[in-house]
Each structure stands twice: as structure tokens, then as C-alpha cells.
Length: 185
Image (cartoon, rainbow, N blue to C red; front, side, top):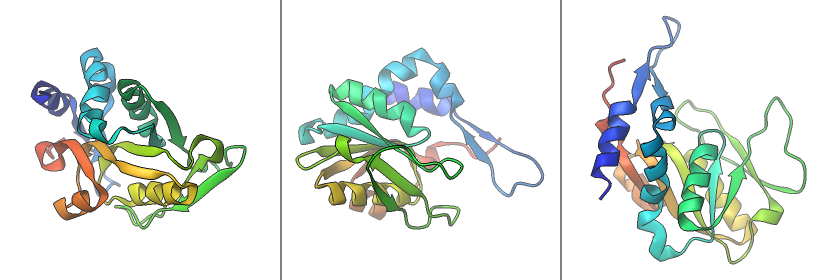
């Protein structure tokens, strides 16, 4: 049903070489955000596998998740809760539930928080993000769900870059596999 969308996502994706000091290419997703048809189809495509679980809320980590999360939430007809990261040492105001991720693909541990008043017992949470490489942020968000008494329904991603075993463990469904994206800049 979403084969045309997957093809369009691959077509609009780019790897960028950030220069001689970098030891890796950087993904450029900006073509996705510029294309109105992709924007219209992303939310429904991401949530389709999770409709039977009847999520009550979508949670997504900053930064790209803040674009995708509302698209998914709108497609489900539910609310959206952003997962914040500290910015320049500043924290979002109000009571928060925090979790720290295990090391990500760069070896960093990421601190994530949601406002307590937006997530609680009885919520069935769909986590949405652009790319799942190690599942580190997903694990942190699942920890926040557990601390708030909410139940993760699974994770929807545009790109799955993790091993199939990890994707199964975290209940990740993606529109593309990282192998679908050409590695040449």
C-alpha cells in the first residue's frame, strides 16, 4: 500500500559528506520535509501497523521526532507528547519524568524527559522516530512509560538501522531498512 511512499523516501534521501574532519557521512532528510505528498502520507503509513493496538498517545524524541510525532498523532486521532532533551543545560519547566538512554551509535547517553501531566496510567504509547540505529532512545522512552504507568505499544520509524532481533524486541516497524539507502554522497 505504501510502496510508492517508500520509493519516494529513498529518492529524496541524501548522504552528506560534512568535510575532511568527519569520519562518517550525515543523513539528510530535508527532502522528506519539502515534499508535500511525503508529508501527507508519512503519518498514516507509520501508524498503520499499530492501529489494532489502539494507541492513546504518540511520544517522539526531539528533534526530528517533533516533526514526525504530530503527523502520526494526527493520523491516529490522538495527542502528541514531545520527549525533551536538555538544551544548553536548560530543562523544560514543570514536573518531568527522566530516563537516560544506553549508549547510542556514537557512544553517547541521551537524557530524555516528558512532562508528567501528559503521560500516565492507562496510556498506550506509540513511540515514533525517524531512524532507529541502536534503540537507545526507544529504551529510554519505554523506561519513561514504565515509570509513568503507561504501556508502550511499539515503535514506528521511517528507517530501521538496527538488527532484526533488536527490532523484534522493541517492536519496531519501519518503512525502510537502512540497507535501502545508498551510502554514496
